[in-house]
Length: 243
Length: 243
Image 1 (cartoon, rainbow over the protein chains, first blue to last red):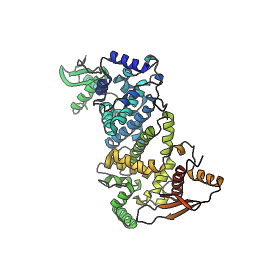
Image 2 (tube, each protein chain N blue to C red):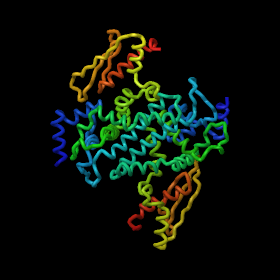
Image 3 (tube, rainbow over the protein chains, first blue to last red):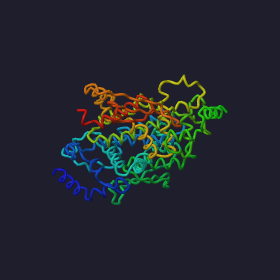
Image 4 (cartoon, one colour):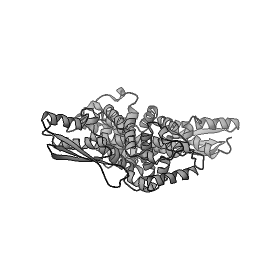
């Protein structure tokens, strides 16, 4: 009963149905939403299947974590042919760190869709990362490794995995760029505006101008990330000028 | 030069070519043997690619380990619907333990195919498991997740992953069976013979007789495993008699 009430509540508060929300988050249509429903079910609902097994997202975190580790391992293996075992292990643990997974889950606003009997503000700080892992597990169960890999590339690797940043060689492209502008006596400014459009996720778009000329544009789920992305693009565009 | 010499040596000593040997070990034809060659290349050869990156099996262990973890995670997730995160994590670490991977690599005789400049008896005890992991990594690179999963099911999960044994509920089916025969005053014997046939891997076949009647047969890469497998079959066949 409470499950149905929760789903209804969440539907009305989300102004859309779960299938559509999922399609936006995933970037593809789910085949079956059963696994995703589990991935958003908190243990406080005390749901059980016919055999009495608990239904909630905790087991799915285990599966999602394993898939994240495998996909990120294969990416790093190919991206850094000079990295030995120790290096690859270290880099992977940075990409799939609790902190990073929490950011990813938060950016996708996963917590909004959780079905729970306890207030959401009582969840611990790791709820975002846990939901992200569970979501990855659900994708694996629903669509297999291929879609799981695709999702991890689109949501984790392509936007955020930058080998130089992970190695600590580049802390922030924004700071590199600002430094260069100051040294070269150039003016710069970031014009940031909240993206319109009816995406489930709020986006920020940014234009980076150097001496009044737009040199890069970017779009991301936070102001900070959009600025960093635009700075990185400008940095590579201007690379022969910077240093 | 030494690489070529080693490959030739190994070919003649193996009485077959690397492609055929691989096909027997893998259970399918490799698309390209490049990755497998790396998976059998020891660092002592000091091989490098055009960019100066080391070519040996150590990096591939990282990849194979990640794939083993993912496939075993997905198997356990489905096989034990009542197991929580902690349980699944513990069970997985038993399946992919160093000890178990060493056994698997040893059974496949992987060490025979290593290209090395140091004597093989100087390798540490973990060489077998390391080669097994690297082989799994090579399969992933050559044929993708699907074949990797298939290989792990055929070589790891189907023959060796028994939830009750992993949980420590059943230490050995052979001992359960012997206990039952003694209690019931039944005679039993195992007839073991080395399998003929021209497999790359030596196999042992076993017949288990209880009161002179053959109740189960099995085939495996060691005498001990064949006996255990036959005992397990007999155990399930006789289950309503044994308690």
